[in-house]
Figure 1 (tube, helix red, strand yellow):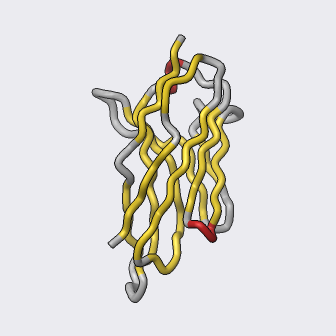
Figure 2 (tube, rainbow, N blue to C red):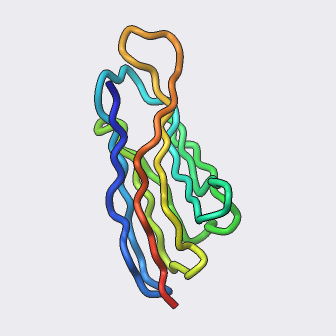
Figure 3 (cartoon, one colour):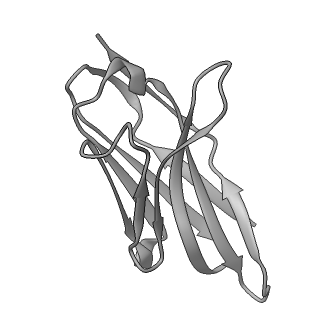
Length: 121
């Protein structure tokens, strides 16, 4: 019905950059908000950054000034530009999409499968 697919993860040296992409597809009427979360083993999943349909953004304190979230509404795609990566940014990064399906009045939440980001020291 709906697919949320991330791409762009990988291994990068400390101080380097990566750009993650996440595309939502399927029977989508409109997307309300999209966001990036990350999780390391043994810890809860945490918000990295989110963006509303109007372009309002929110960032975790740990990534402010280094990461930038953006979206292309026409493509149902959200991006996360990660600069000045640190080893502590190492995690699986998940994309979350809050959207309204075609012919459904309520909002639904969908997660991607995750992409590994590793910052080496």
